Image 1 (cartoon, rainbow, N blue to C red):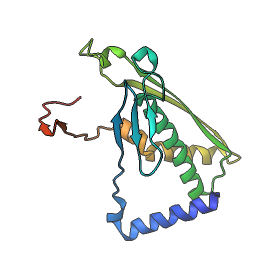
Image 2: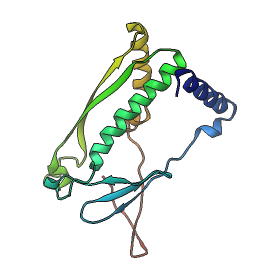
Image 3: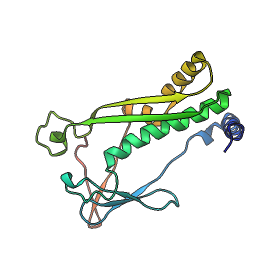
Image 4: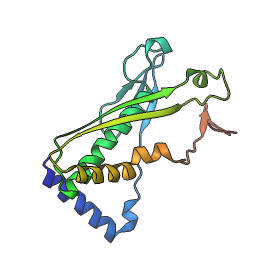
Length: 179
């Protein structure tokens, strides 16, 4: 898809939202199901199911990335997509955008061995490499826009209300506390 085509689609989407602000609120859905061992299948829209598993040293059979690795991929790909979107709208040419990410997790939290250690990432670091003939000043403005408008980065940086329920054999269970 060309730079101009992306720009046209995104500008039309922004115009539609300006004309109908209620249309800006969207809901994304996914479903997952545990299979054999640690292997799970993740289903999004009409795409083939994603294979998600744990490495063998965490009890899985390594048939796919694990959930915390998918969080890193979600952040990197969201950054890259938002770079493409803003660059198209602003007319900034991009030759390539690549993210390298590292997530630091202490397994004592996952295994409940230390109540002071969170189960999730304690730190995520990324490095985004941009190749473009545009001026450094334009690319710095682009980077600042992406850093302040990337949905996955925003989700990871701010408290987000997460709620849910558990149904055991058809009967709802009250959740006392969540992480």
